[in-house]
Image (cartoon, rainbow, N blue to C red; front, side, top):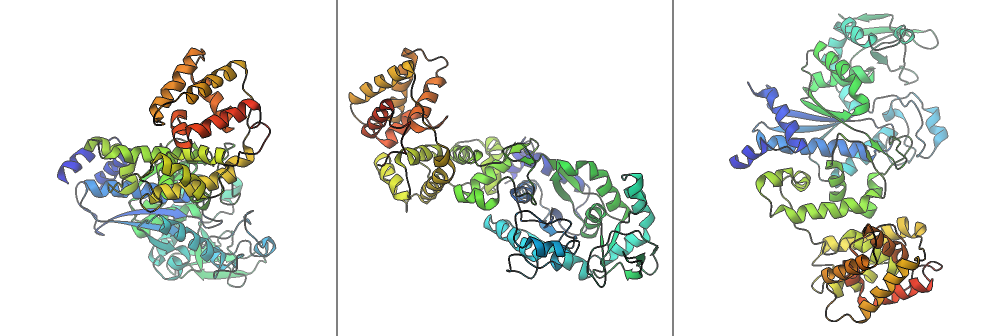
Length: 532
C-alpha cells in the first residue's frame, strides 16, 4: 500500500490531483471532527438527471483517491434542497394543473403528481437515491426539510441572524440595484399558505433569533429563524450549509463558478472554513444546449442503462471533467467499447499506468476482467444485418465465432447482447439508410466477393482485415478510410462501424457473401433489413 501511495502522490490523473490539493487542507493537523467531509447538492425541482449522478460519481472518485493517499476517515453527504419553493412546473411530469396550484410551496409540501410518495420532493429524492443505489455509492442522504425542522441547522441560522448585516453585505454586492431594495437572505414560510415568500425584512432580531415582515396582503408576521419556519436563499444556504456541516469538499458546474466567492464568504462569516472546490464543465444535449431537469433534454440515467452498463456511464463521466461534453445516445457504443479496452489493459500495466486508468477510479482499484469477446459496436452491426429482435439471434452467430462463450459463462457479454438488440431496434433501425455503391466501390466489392468465394480455412478476423486493406489499396481509395466507410454505408446502412474483418469473421463468410450480393443487386437500398 505504501508503494502505491507513493505512486498516487505523483499521479497526473485528475482525481489524485484533487485529492492531493484537499490533503493539504490538513497538513498540520487532522480535522477536529475526525473525518474529511465530501458533499454533493441536489435541487429536487425536477426528476434527477445524469449530471446529478455525475457529481456523486466524480466526488466518489476523488474520495477514493484521497483514501489512498491519506489515513483520515471520510464521509460523503448527498444534500437535497427540498425545502426550496417550486418556482416553475417541470415540463416532463404529469398533473401540471395541480402543480401550478402549488407554486412557491416547498417541494416537500407539493403533492406528488405521480401519486406514489408523500410529496413531489419525496418522490424526486427517492428517484435520486434509487439511481445512486444502483451504482453502489456509499453516501449519507440529508433532506433540507428535515435538516431545518430537526434543529440541526438552528445554531447556524441564529448566527445568520446575528451576522445578518455581514451576510447581506456579501449578497447585495452581487445584485442589481432594484433587486437590492427587496432582497433578504431569509425566506419565511407563510404560516397559513405554506408558500415560500420573497419579501423584504422589516426587522431581524439577533437577540431573539426572529424576523419580522409583511406578507403579500400587508399583514405583519414575526417568525423564529429556527425550526423550519424560515429557509435561506439558495446562495446563502450553500455557504451556511458548509459552515453547519463542516464541509471540506464540494464540486459544482461551471454555471456556479462566479458564485464561489459568495459561497465562501458566507461560510466564513458564519464561522466555517470554506471547502476545497472543483468546477466541472456542463453536459450538453445533441444540439449543444445545456441539459436541464425541467426541460428533460439530454439523457436520463434510466435511458443510458437501457442500452449499456453502469460502468460504461461511469467511464463517460470520468473523461475530461473540465471539458464540455455532448451527452446523447450516439456516445453510448463508443463508451462501452472504450471502457472494456481499459479493463482489458489494466492487469498488464505498471502501477503508475493503473492509477491513470479510468478503470481504477470506476472500480476503486478492484478492476474486474472483461468477458466482452465481441465489441459492442460489432454487436450493433450484427443486430443490424440480422434484423435481430432478441438475444437468441445474436448468440447464434457468437457461438460460431467464440464456441466457449455462453450466456452463463459470459454474463457481461450476454447483457451487452441484450443492450445491443434494444439499441438497434430503438435507435438505429428507424434511421438506417443504405446506399448503392459507385462504380469504383462496386468493382472493389466484387473483388471482395471473389476473394471470399476462394477463401480457405478459418474465418480469421486479422487475415480478413488484411484482405480488405489490400483490395482497398489496389483500387486506390485515398484515404483508405473511404473504402471502409463505403462498406459500412452500402452493406450496413451506417456511416461508421467496427473492423470489417472482425465483422465478417463473426457474421460468417457465406452470410457476408449473400449480403454483398444483395447490396450490389440493390436490394438493401430498397428493402427492410434482411431476415436471417
